[in-house]
Image 1 (cartoon, rainbow, N blue to C red):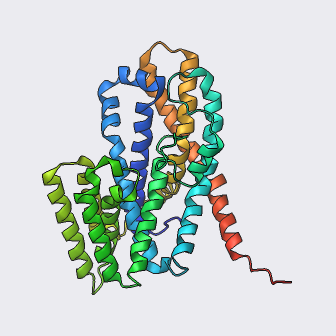
Image 2 (cartoon, rainbow, N blue to C red):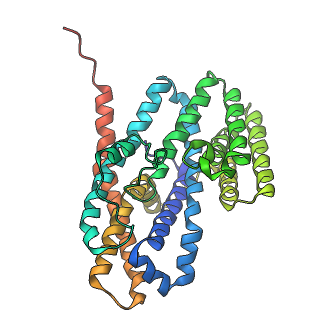
Length: 354
């Protein structure tokens, strides 16, 4: 469900900023439009290519924070397998719908673009690999940019849910298991790129987010969670001393902000608040559909054959704005309709046996 209370506006703002950085990273990285942008503003383009991708760490920490909040408040009441199936449906149904749009846009853009930017027409096995969220594990070519994250998000959620299920409802055991797994990720798995298709590689950031939720509850018994969170942060700092990774430093910083201020009310002017909610709620949709807009923008740039690279910046700005509009349309007309269909299907009473 979309977050509506002012207490979570900080999370909304983090999601919005991170989503925009990911979009601009891809616009700076792919296609002839990105080449023209690099000529028009080389330093800006280089920064987005090298650093904006680290916004993924913000999503990882925030996702862990929200998952701990959801799972810790009765999220496993229906059982582990049912909970994971619901998560799978929530992620995959909009994901597959967005891939259909990407395939259509790829077909439109393919005659006008060279190189590896446009995905090839998908085969059945490729569709099945994406629909099962196994495309990265199986080494299948992606149909869109950044779709690896959808698979990783599900793996991380499943791992966190498994740890909470193993704790049998004991929050302190759950915190200890999550802290141990996060430390293992920060100090071992995240140092080996061979693990980057598995949740273990990213669980350091995700686990920090989960621990930040428990540490920030400010309840009578939250001292234990806070101690485990601080211990995990210390382990992360020690891991950085051995091998510095900017992405882990960012994850530590974001988790600290959430542990300190994640539940602090943030009251915004009504119109600003409405825009923040709208952009935050459509951030997943933006992640799913922006590559389609990127393909069409690059194809149009190639067709127009604009020789003056100074036009690349306003052209990219317009494409970025169109990606935001497309994400809002996808969120309201596809993502929310799928959610409504899922809710109505779940509410249908079982038919009696005849």
